[in-house]
Length: 462
Image 1 (cartoon, helix red, strand yellow):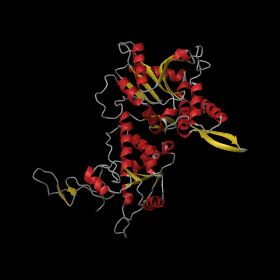
Image 2 (cartoon, one colour):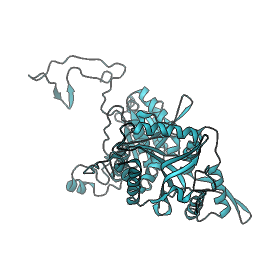
Image 3 (tube, one colour):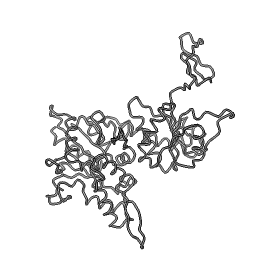
């Protein structure tokens, strides 16, 4: 199979996903049906205008024109800065104003309808030519949503032993330099030779490009032979792609540089399942006893037990937590929940708080950090809805004159996210002790539900 055959097969997979498919030269500026006025344009303006009018029925035509003009006007000379600004417009809408009944109306024009897939146009174009700074560049496949180029696929021939997916990766780096306007709107980059396929963010290096191993969920069987087919059928599923763009793209500041991060397939599917489980667990608890008797001690309505997500070291736990928080906060069934992020160490609390603070655009609010027990109680007891609160578990200890810890807030939609929940607590007076009461096999015994074994970890003197 040569590169052209792979390209055609890839387009067939897009068609199977209900994408429209067009051949680039058929809509080129010098074609019989041009969709661009020249080869320097990177968006399909006619498609964009039609989609905005369909999505924003309440806006007059001049407001639609304002929105398009603002989208096409770069914020700076830096590509990633412009990409971040565009992503914000995708999530929040484009600010516009217009006159109505002698009054100036401030409103927003939305570029994508995240709630109604049918209001959006999904288009895959192959052999899409753009005039670069040095010469014209012809891209293998460009994916458009409402005329906006949100993804680029660079393909290499499976039969050519002299090239691989990293040649495709290097090709994309050249494109970013020579046709940078295209990547202002980019949400994902894909490199593939068919058998192998990797997906990454705009600022990702080779190590951050990873496979997409699932289509609908983690249990897809049998696995498809070609990784590119799995990626196209999975990542570019229209419903899941809109969900991905909305909740699984993050930007962070690293020493003054903006880093764009996108979730891997394991984070994407884990977060979607975790959000569904949380919504069920937070429902009205009526009849919980009967439901547990019927279904067992699993996630049932009102159980308040959402579950556990297991992460190995280096698999992106912080990104998963941010995406989970961002998606959960915008679920109408949760009725504007409060998220309480609990860690067991001050340094971890600070690191995670900083990560969430960098991703505040995803949450549409700014996280807060409890500095001591008093502030934690105040933040929880006074809050009627919303918010992301960070604390260490030690701040839940009762005061000296309290027999038991008081209830701080009885709302059903307070969600506790516990990080590093497997750790024990040392405290400032923690120490190791030797224990003699072991079994014959040398294993520690249990007494009153506490494990006494070498070494036992104590919280202070308790």
